[in-house]
View 1 (tube, helix red, strand yellow):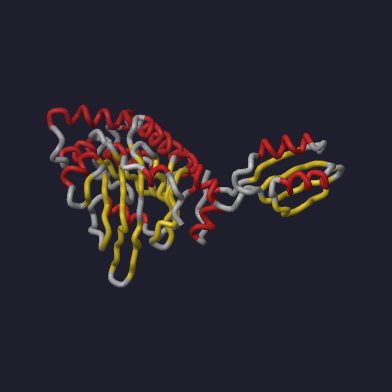
View 2: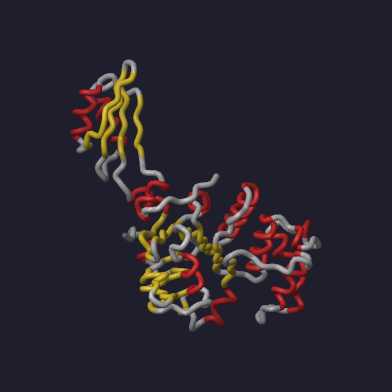
Length: 325
């Protein structure tokens, strides 16, 4: 299932794939996926571990060649356009790797020196800016082995920010972090997105999606089973349910039935009943409330219950997701 979205109708895409496929022998790791990431979006690439997320990222970055299909990054075909695309892309895949006995600053200097597009004359200025951007200026002279996990993740992000980037690709950026480290990395990603960078975040954590992303794509068993905005996900599952608490439950049911609400349940509590039913698409909750009041129904509570993201993802993938605060 693919949820219709603005991304499907625009050519202004930072990442676009058509039938992208990767096979390893007889195993199909990525099976004909069509991904559409609008420029300026924070795109959450979700799925259980082993669903094909990292393999897809490696194809987008030209680290492995696809078995079939096409990948476009920043409007250019990959891996054919590696030389022109990669200088505009920052990436952190499968965790940062640093020389433990060099300082954070020294590690960044080495990374920058390895970039043939960078200028040696302004290298130290770039490194200082990147460290400041990720909040590590105070630890620039500290050896990397003494960094906490959160600091190492931020140092990894700094390597991706040494040069101006149009697209930032992050594979599990908060993996293994404590709550404080997770909050630090989230805040950094938000600030990067606010500056106009398109961010592509691979994660199996629902909190990353709910707190960071504007758009999402869900992988399951190598296939892209859904994509769209967060709001589209919330609207795309089972229909919303309406719940009315009232002592006039029979009259309430008559009004609800006139809107096509399908009765689902009734629960008695003290001097009121709670009537719950499935609300058809396109029905306005405000119109239902107005009709209840107009019919003389004493409304003591009214709620529209929507499917949680966790329920929606489990429905799409058949598997659970890790949920962290």
